[in-house]
Image (cartoon, rainbow, N blue to C red; front, side, top):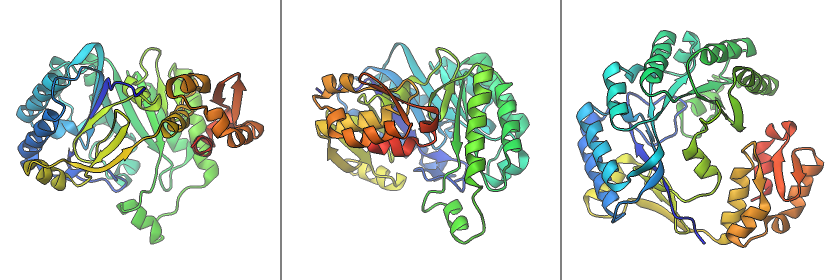
Length: 375
């Protein structure tokens, strides 16, 4: 019953510094641990046994491209052996604009990278300073141009709703992004994760979040301007040119299995959801000692799988087919969660056609609540 994993995520924890909003597992400025990390990753890959062919491989972080060329080459060597990419597969790498050089782009292309995701976040100097980013508008635009010329498939991330930001300033960021040769855009409202610097500053009253109506206005602007530019929205936060949806993320949202390696990485294999220890140093130590890096392990029931597939899938604009989920899992989500689903339909958040459900325009603004109805 459980899907055979055909997707893999590898977490590379290195970065220049931890930005104030970042809650990921990272090792700022610790490239001295690059070789020990690769040794640990090699040990974790050995647990897979024989090579596991994948259709998508996503190398994220952190900032994978912070690795020096020699270590980056070793990373690709390890992954090519243990997780060979199928013909026509998607190989994505995250990078920051300030790391992009002609030599790096050439190295990535030579190793089979066919999709690059740049953490641009903004083109505005004041906003970049607030977000504690190291690049500027010019270097971001240059990075996109270099990546597009050699790799072709370029995605960028943008953050909106930062303290003091206006809808006009956000539209300027969008306009700049949409003039660049990108194929994919992800937009995120700034979140304040507990334990981050930004959470603390807001808790102390140093920052005030922007008004909800401005947040909503910025989201609507993103939808409208991306549509005009030919980037069609296919998920709550994601827009793509035709044929350039992120296939790796689609695997998550559609509830397929996936491998995941590195500190803090979460995998779903053979009905088990397992999460590696979030601390990179603990991850390294456990593998150096010949121990498992897994910190959490949960056996997923068919009911959980069915409901989670519906909850994540409904965030896609194509919607979900509950009959298809029933055939795959043996669980009828429409019966289990019928009352909550009907309430979403009655409130105008979901449209329904037979067993197919999808978010309405009003439902897009209530997506988290709608997703909860399926859980």
